[in-house]
Length: 188
Length: 188
DNA sequence: TGTAGCATGTAAGCCGTTACATGATTGA
DNA sequence: TCAATCATGTAACGGCTTACATGCTACA
Image (tube, rainbow over all chains, first blue to last red; front, side, top):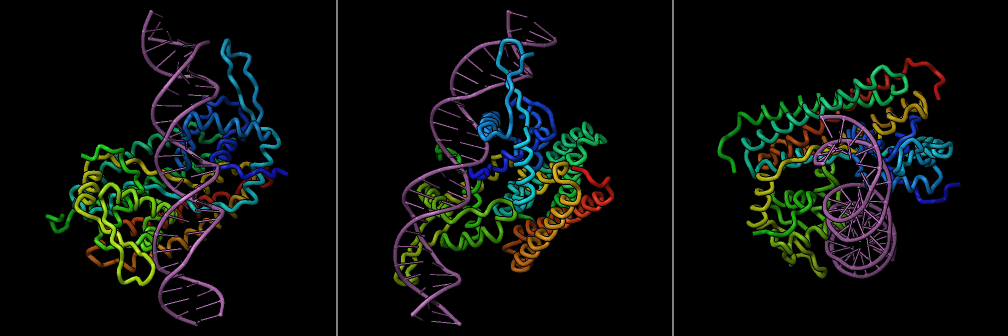
């Protein structure tokens, strides 16, 4: 069965969003992805959403339905089917989760501190802490929207994990910035 | 000057590794990347290392020299030059660091816990904690190799940051696994 | 003598982004 | 009536990986 090449993880991620039961448009899926997936996977471009939906459809894992209540324009709503749920469970059960990959431009720039000196590095870390705060607030808002709802117990775990991560990150980065303070001046 | 399209970040990352002064082969650069960059950026494939080196060379940011002490085969050693250092500093000074991107398959799978049930999720998290431990040990070894050396003060900061991250991650994940224990059985 | 490691590349192809293009609907 | 949002796609292309290909060197 299913002798095709394995789906890319992002495809499973979108299928996963659909596994919560709603019937969604590509546009709505994008909004979901932007508010949840983006914190620990990616925020796929609209164009990718649509091409993944086409792929999942072709494989018979989701079903498209043209929304009748949408007036003139053609609005397609997608719903996961039994095959899709089976495929997801199969994937979860049989494949080994890969180790997380971090693309951390701030760490990369810290690595190159010798090129710019501690002053400049401290300023950059400061900016990062600020953006962490904003990101954390966004995630908190997401959690507030689902917390307590038993249907979203696992998403809530993930969100709380993210908050803890941001908190830890803030503490560590602040610590590094402080250590940078008392350094031999006039590097570079 | 430099009216070409901006370099991809990975290119700057490799240039950054060369900014520590050594004259390295592509092969050696790959080893460096695997032991340091991979923790917070990527471990580029060999083939990409070589193509990035070609690009950096073409732009005049690094200099290639055929190693005479290498016997029969042609071994190219690359060294950063003044233009390369200037380009790196320019990049660090003028571009805004992007927010980190996390590709976290474990979080993604936790999100889908409703499909497999708490038992299975706990097992997966356990496996993740194990791999975290291994990863942490690797990074600790890297730190041990550079700690105290003033030339690698900033890389040491980055490494310690990574260790803190792994520690925090372990604590959070263990906490989630524990919360999963006392759950209504027979989900799914 | 053979194998693991050192060393360098080319080719094909997927994932994902940006740019481009179009049009309906809602609400100020 | 105008702009923001909803909604759906196509085309081009860059980054990066995997697979393929080659050969030297050190060492057991």
